[in-house]
Length: 242
Image 1 (cartoon, rainbow, N blue to C red):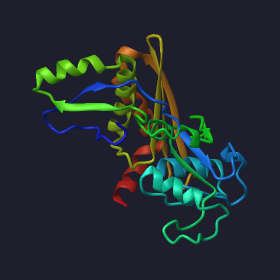
Image 2: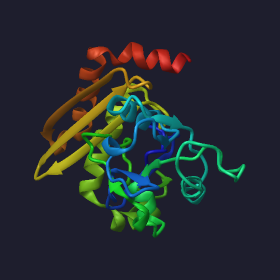
Image 3: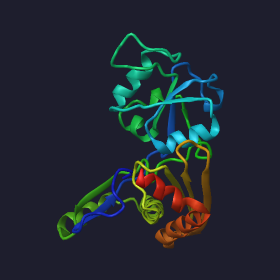
Image 4: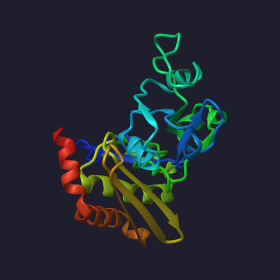
């Protein structure tokens, strides 16, 4: 769901969401080092996510961020060619990387959980909006299919998804924006953490809100309003313009 636009095309609906997988980002290192804080000075970290880049740079301004694209196997291969920040013998691999950051859920679903060196605490790297959630989209008017899909619905996941998506929608963000959110359900309460960041990590606007799970979407919008009031509006507008 993290790649699904906040506004669906007319006539389509997310008829069911599956139980959320681990929403955290995964650190995968060549050396086995388990914390970003412990990587050597000027180590190379691979990611193309502005959200991840911003939070990594805020934590460790000395780390070198290198673009990391391709499917999961390609990204892991770029790490496996070696470490140290030099140029590999493989022209397809490019710059050597000491670590890469991927979604834990993706690695787990591909049977690659063993490649996860550490799962990054959300206080270090808040995940993407709805990371780890799988949604099933269908025609809103197809009552038969909608009814069948209800059997797959995970209600707790729907509630946290609604809060996170409402947060991102109010901010006008896309999956490429330096926006992060994580909602957690405890009883009938949701705690939603949100973040908007400068891509260079020089400014992280964070806030948290707790309220009734029955008002999940309203909570998301309220948190977005608070972060906008703290200065996120001009930041996001500048990024959209550029």
